[in-house]
Image 1: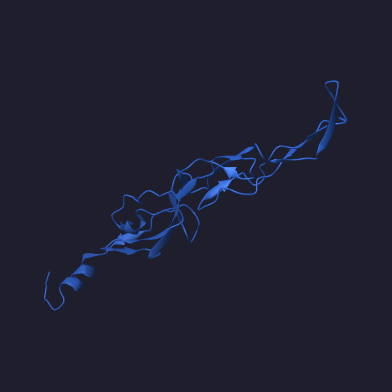
Image 2 (image 1 turned 180 degrees about the vertical axis):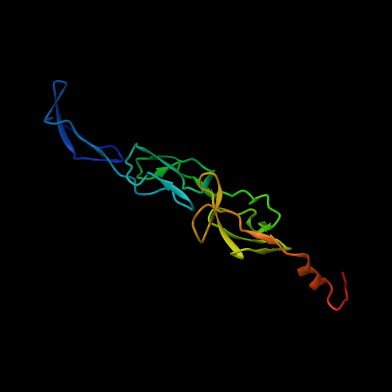
Length: 184
């Protein structure tokens, strides 16, 4: 007599067989073993996504980074082992950066928008010597998905420059000449 059972990582019934003249008897159906779903070792962490929710022994799945994130180390090629654990899923994701905001316009102060990461906010103001025509401040959010641009938080549209107009010289003269008599 012999008994077959499923290998580690698989489930199925036990089957008893008898060997008679070199042939197995009692074999009405071949034994069937089904792979077991992995329950541990799923990829996780900031910005990590995967298709590993239903993976079984011997199967593979992929882990990667969400929009606005990039791989900073590890591998996203996961394999479900017979231990019930996904292995080789040691991926690390970090937020992408947006480029420095440069609209080529001296009337704007965009310095707070340098070195922003995906999801971080910054403000655009009129530069010194300029006054806003309309909104005084524009709040932007780094949207590092795709081309890495900024969106206007108020409108959720792609960012466009504030309108700032140069202040007239007399606006500066009042500040500079306090108590002085200047003619002409």
